[in-house]
Image (cartoon, rainbow, N blue to C red; front, side, top):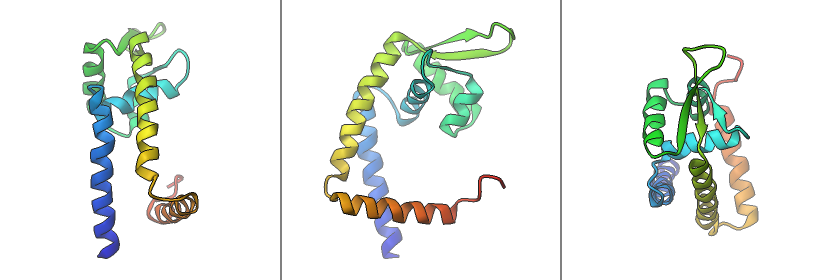
Length: 143
């Protein structure tokens, strides 16, 4: 119970403080996830809605809502696929690219701040323990 109680409390505090950084920019965690996934795709920062859903690990319906919010803010735009009139592409706008780059800087600084109480050895040990535990809990990728 001590392990799970502490993990739960840490997770809540981390989520609150990570979300606060995104909120400073008018984003939710899911919105940031979409922008960051498009950014990681590389130039031209474009993915299909289904690829975005897969990258963000949420349903296509949830992805569609996130895309609509981001499009309304001018951070992404939808274009029609050249070879398939039914298909769409989602791309970062220049404003969206500038925003996600700025948010990533703040997000990484926040993560460094949150990890600061641990020295390098403690961070390495925690990483190894969490990796080991996660691998034991997750099903193999080929199943």
